[in-house]
Image (cartoon, rainbow, N blue to C red; front, top):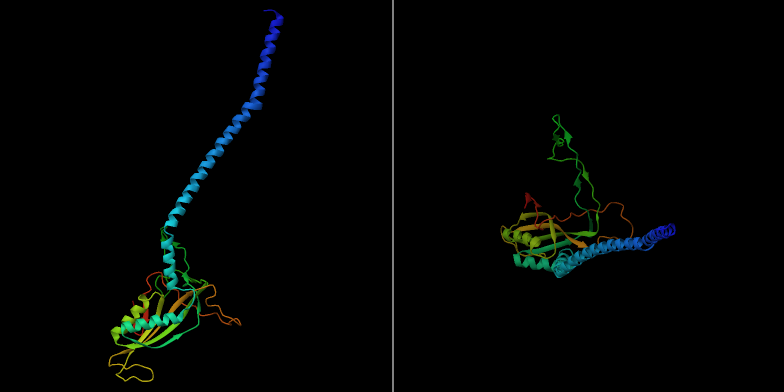
Length: 267
């Protein structure tokens, strides 16, 4: 092979290398990069589709129980309505009295009062003993296991209680049945906070009071019905100079809770 042929071969090789380099940088490498980016985007889209499908499945499951949820909310609405509805409650109370064999003599209703949850005890960090074990702080004299001062909780906006004082007469067993039914026999939630009962002598009907027999009792029952409304407990006119009285919040269990009687606390 002569020198001229060698130059042509060398030039051809160099040109081939340049063409291959240009093809890599201008066509092959960008294509591979775009393909990798497309695969990454496709994986992300697939993951997103999996998440959306899981959300859709949850929504379908929730939609299946929508009617039950609406029924539960309707039941809560009957327990704590958006309006006081005292006339309806008085009629239900009268029916309860007739069914239990007592006579409601008077019923007094107060204005709605704002509601605040019970104050929560402030938690106190335990101190370290000599052996490194945590020890409880000593309880104050006259208390049982108190850990610190109470933390005040503000009133619940739109949640009000209406105080009711009911006076009824009847036989002892009927009166206690009436207390039971008032708390558990009506759809409306009624929280008994106090009751007193005193024995009566036999007497004829007079001054709007029914005839009573020997051993009958007069019951004075105090408690709250509740209202849930954006304007519940709101007052018009001048602002009060004192903080409004706060009604007790119903306990997180059955409405029939411990109530205070003239002789102590009865469950």
